[in-house]
Every structure is written in structure tokens, then in C-alpha cells.
Image 1 (cartoon, rainbow, N blue to C red):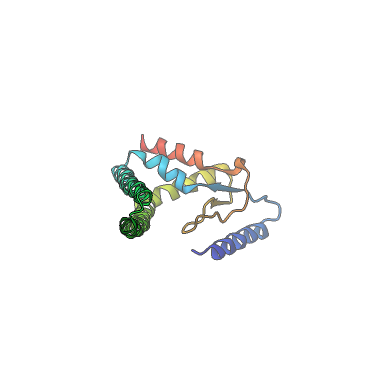
Image 2 (cartoon, rainbow, N blue to C red; image 1 turned 120 degrees about the vertical axis):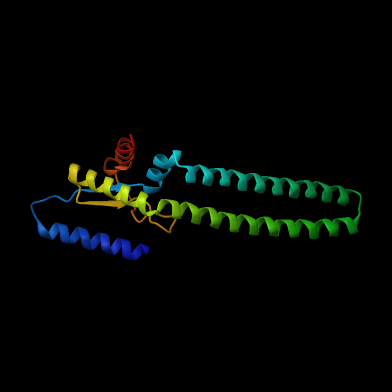
Amino acid sequence: MSFKRTVLVSILALSFLAGVSAQQITRVAVVDLAKVYLTYSRDSAAVRKLEEDKLKVQAEIDRMSNEIKQLQVRRAEAIARSDQAEVLRMDQELYRRAQYLSEYYKAKQAELEDRSRRLMESSDFSQLVYRTIQGIAEADGYSVILSSHSTGSVTSAIIWYSPAVDVTDKVIQALIGKAQ
């Protein structure tokens, strides 16, 4: 759902709820689904594999970055020796490796983000989280619970909220209680 659509649906839902009962105060809460997912699923084999893969990708990026730094040192030495042919060769090699590193980083970042998103959106997990949030909302009298982070975006659809309405930790504790 797009940011504008999410905000519009939220406003319409709040307007509807306010119109239904003028006497009832609408209670709103927020939940950080990414935090719920990471905290609750830490023991999941799929999550562990994803975290291992993230570490491997970072190690490969670090290795390539170190190789580029070593080439830069060799280039500086060639400059000190006034070896223009070697400097030119090093410049070409540095450019090629920097391009590869940049492409590798973008590709792996997109792959890892996609895997993370698919894990978080798995139907079993989503249903469990939805039912847990619904139970908390009904038990605590919340009319609306919004995600504190907009999916598909690095920014939140919510500009500001009081920590008092954040039910993230309550959702995590309820999920942990159900797992036991």
C-alpha cells in the first residue's frame, strides 16, 4: 500500500470511528512490526540463515574494500616513483574494482532486503502477529493500531507518536507467551 493510501485509509478509519460514537474516545496505538519480527523470530532457522548471509556479504565487502585500499597504496608508491604507466594501470584497476564493489553491494543489499521482507510477510507469521495485535487491541481498548514504519519505505507513515501508545513490546511478550 502506498504512503498516501495508507494515510488516507487511516484518516478515513479514524473519521468513521469518531462518527460512529461521539461519546467514545478513539484510542490509537502503534507497533514496530520489524522489531516484533526480529525479536520474536531470532531463534528461527530462516532468520539465523539470513543473519549468517548478511555477515558473509559484509565480510566479502570488507575483503574487497581492503583490496582496493592496498591498490591505492601501490598507486601512491607508483606516483612516488614517477611510474606513469603503473599509475595509469592502477587507476584502471581501481575503477574496475570500485565499480564491481558498488554493483555487488547494490545486488546483495536488494537480495537480502527481499529475503527479509518475504520472511516477515510469510502467511503463518503474519497471521500470528495479526491475531496477537488484534487480541491486544481488543483487550486494551484500542480502536486502531498503526504500523510505526511504512512498508516499502524507509520513512514512517506516522510523523510523531507518544511512546505510551507503542504496543510493540506487548506484542513481542504475547508472541513469546504463545510460543511457550
